[in-house]
Amino acid sequence: MNEQEVDAVIVGAGALGASIAYHLSKAGRKVALVERGAIGSGCTSATYAGINVSAKEGGCYLKFTLDASRLYLGIEDELDADVEYYNQGSHALVVERESDWPAALRNVEELNRVPGINMEVLPTPKAQLFEPALPKWIQGATFCPVDGFLNPHKLVNAYVRAASRLGAIVQTYTEVREIEVKSGVVQAAVTSSGKIHTPLVINAAGVDAPSIGRMVGASIPVVPAHGQVITTARVRPFLRYPMRGLVQKRSGNLFVGTTKKYIGPTHEVRPELLPGAISKALRLFPFLCEAPAVRIWVGVRPWPIDGLPILGPVSGVKGFLVAATHSGITLADMIGHVITDLVVHGNTSVEIDHYHPDRFKGDQLSFVTKMFGNMQVLEPRLFA
Ligand SMILES: Cc1cc2nc3c(=O)[nH]c(=O)nc-3n(C[C@H](O)[C@H](O)[C@H](O)COP(=O)(O)OP(=O)(O)OC[C@H]3O[C@@H](n4cnc5c(N)ncnc54)[C@H](O)[C@@H]3O)c2cc1C
Image 1: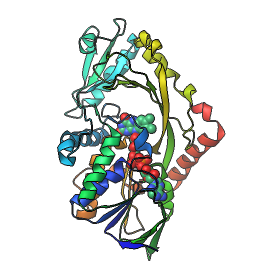
Image 2: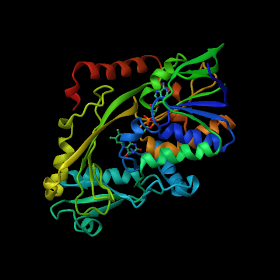
Image 3: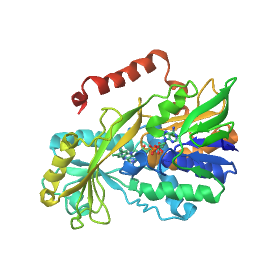
Image 4: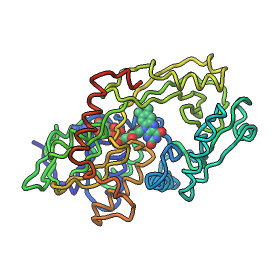
């Protein structure tokens, strides 16, 4: 059997694992990035890839997200790659009914409590100055200037190329099957192509984070959430800014969606779960009824049961770190920095106390995990 020795094995080459591999390599660590499929073939291949600040609720997580989004400002120079980074903002909400204004205004007020977000309220007709295609009959829109987008395929490959240039070993089509632990200390990762001796395994396996956790006896409560998007044929350019659930790409194609449904780890296409997004797009822009759908794609979102990232060491096992989250495109670069801080310095100046893997304990953990489990088994359509 082929055997190697590295400072760290990273399980999973999605956005998170690739970023961690790059940042750790840059810090001088010898890493092996081990991926069961192709680079970025998990959820990272099926994402909207919004640098999404405005969709967060307020507080620490919003601040963490804003700080994460700012790290992308220099990403193309840093990785020496075009990742189609766009940072001109997005329409956070398009308000159709007068009765929805109070909630939209509360949302803006809440988000603006974090300095630097600078959400704007655009009552009609101001909304149309921003976005001439919006119809006159809407009440207005809110706008988040710090939202952005990038190309996730280019991002993940750019991280991996940059990590490789710094000496990282990248093994694709290789599965991590076992983690050897002796007296509570990680010794090695056993893969489908050999054993890698290492004192550190970093679990960046996305929706499979729980199964990697089980290899060391740790419970990582991430559940699969079905995310689905429609791509239309090219239409004439009409949207200046992305909006939630409707984005026009440079090519003219539209992304319409998306969903977040707890129906198990399935990639099955379920168009019946998308009517809200489709009808909203058609209400706002009726001419889109002429735009044929050319593709529907599904990604299985890694969803921590409380919606917050799971970052850091697991008590009781020395040499095992977890990096699992939704919004993993928005947060990938930040998480690469944070995990590298933890490995190199043993701590980080970034506020991550709320994201500790040990926060899920006892009754709460078993209750919520069971609840999600039952959702999948009992009645998927109940949650549509
Ligand atoms: C429709 C949709 C829209 C989304 N929109 C956004 C958005 O706008 N903004 C945003 O920030 N996020 C968005 N997300 C979420 C985001 O895409 C994910 O959070 C992110 O891609 C997760 O990255 P990851 O690296 O953690 O996981 P993945 O990309 O899933 O990577 C994990 C990798 O681990 C590998 N793996 C698993 N087990 C093993 C093993 N035993 N051995 C070796 N390899 C293994 C898998 O093959 C996989 O490639 C969206 C998701 C979906 C589905």
